[in-house]
Length: 104
Image (cartoon, rainbow, N blue to C red; front, side, top):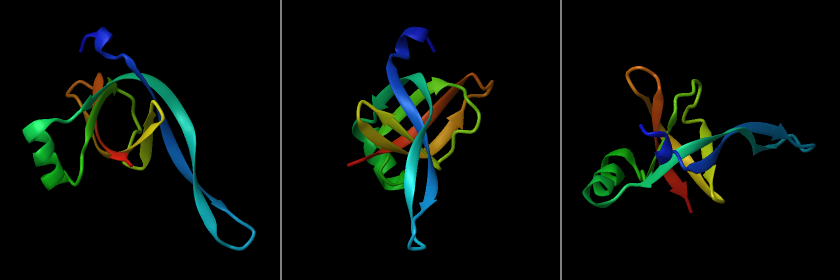
């Protein structure tokens, strides 16, 4: 991938469970790292297929390879939140393709 396509700055977040004084808890998200990416909405027939087969994938995010990104993380881009559905590294582990569902 050409470097010029990585023009969208995103933040990858991880969740932690915080206990409260009543014995319950809540999920809090904290920033893990920021990266330059290519955020692409899925369009047309491909979006229809993704919605049917994979349950609501709305965007594909490409970024340089980084180990450890899983479906337990989320991505924040321009104030919007994306849940990670799938993470696919390329064959030589230079790039990641992340399928996401935007939280509305």
